[in-house]
Structure formats: structure tokens, C-alpha cells
Length: 200
Image 1 (cartoon, rainbow, N blue to C red):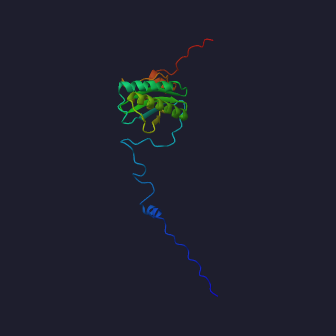
Image 2: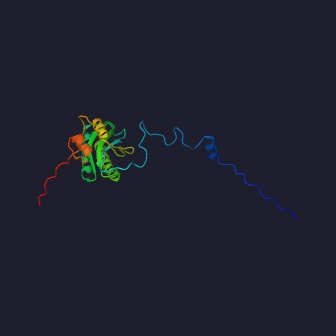
């Protein structure tokens, strides 16, 4: 009677990718890993934006493509000012100040929360892109990446942002600031604008 020999345990060769990963060739966090940056300035990283309250103003920077720049022209100024009207229709999002740079827009905005900030900026960018494309007789994208948003949590941060955005060519949007920090630094008053009495 013959007995079968027990099968040998399988000795599988690890995949080439795993071998290289252990050897330090592939995988893992290392300098230069990930998608290469497009252009001279890296795009805003796709991360969950921090929680925002209605009492905190936000400094926003959004860049435009090189085909749209420079923005400091009469036709582009007119297009951006027309796009501002879109934000005036919203009650949960306000553009308090807007400065037009050569290749970007800088804004001081207020929003009820981060969802209102996202919707408000999306609406403004869509309107601005449409107006700018019409003014420049072109089609296609205008804003290449996500906007950069920095929440201003202290009066010092608000004061620094206002100083950075202060210049003769600044467009002061007609939205009245509701956060007390912006009212104090921009208008020198704490109380909101008095409302007209309702005539019934």
C-alpha cells in the first residue's frame, strides 16, 4: 500500500510591488509623492473645510487662468461688478469687500456656516466666469482650482486682512457687514445698521 506524500506548503513569491514597497522603492509617504502641482502655485488641497459660524468673517482668495488675466481692465471690472449682484440676492452669504488683483480676486465675506460659504462662492464664481467669458469673447474655465478660505477668528486677523485688502482700487461691495469684528474695523461701530420702521 502506497501512501501519498503530504503536499508541501505553498511558498508563493510576493508581488513585485510589495517587494519594492518593503525595499523602500514604492509606496509610503515620501518627499515629492502625489500628483504634481500645476503651475507656479499649488492648488488648494481637497480637505474638509473647518467649521464656520456666522460670527466669523472669512478672507477668500480665488485665482483665474492665465488666459483671463490680467483682470485690471475696464471690461473685466465691469463684468466682476455685475457678478456681485448675484451675491446680493442671498441672505446667508455676503461679500463685504472685493479687491481685484492682476490674476486673482480677494474677498472679505460673511456666511452663516460653511455650507452657505460654499454655495455663495459657487454662485459668485459661476456668475463671474460667465460675465468674464462674455467680456473677453471666450469660452471655458475661468477659475482653475478651489478657492482658498481663511477664517478670521480674532480682531488682529481681521485688521491684518483689511490692511492687506486696502488700496485705492478696492471695490467695496454694497453688502453691509453683520459680524461685529468687521463692523468695528471697517465702520468704527459695533451696532448694526438701524432698520427703517415698518409702515403697516
